[in-house]
Length: 271
Image (tube, rainbow, N blue to C red):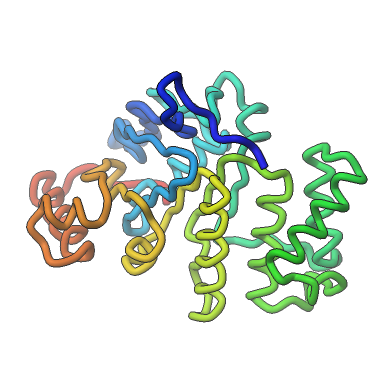
């Protein structure tokens, strides 16, 4: 297991640092349309940081920039100490990304699929086989070793997707709406797995629009809407600061206040 990086005073160094991150798309009739609007936050090792927002709030755009799929229009983002624009290869080597689309190959077994991703990351063969055994045992996946993707249940596919996300033991994990469309039992298993990864010291950023997931899982949360972060803190801090009974009421109050301020405002794009 990788050690947690620390500064000279012994405090954990942020593994994700986002400063004034902005992404706009050009519209011929309306000019620039902002998917992200000067977003800033940081995430430390052993922390689950939630991005809570409705569809189209900018969550997926942010995560795609962090995973080097998109380039920002303005601002900076560093993951595991590497710049997402200038050092994309180093960023990709230090992250695991799981979207809500499992993308499981029909003609590969569970074992073959995770093994394939391990080889893509350049894990030496003897080490890879040991790593696969560890993951399949830890995630209770031995029942899918020989199951083809086309024959897997939704729960099996999610387990395989998580396994290939963590096969190279990255320090940073990115989960984009990982429980979307899942039944209650499978969603619970996914959340429990993510919680166990936090206990291993992983830095985790978790995108969702589901309040109970934030309350159950996240150490801190940023509420995002129309590409802007409206508030950041623990659930208790946000409830206290905004004088609301729970995070759901905080969420709707902040969104309602922003909509009233903007009126029609800029249309949001992105996920």
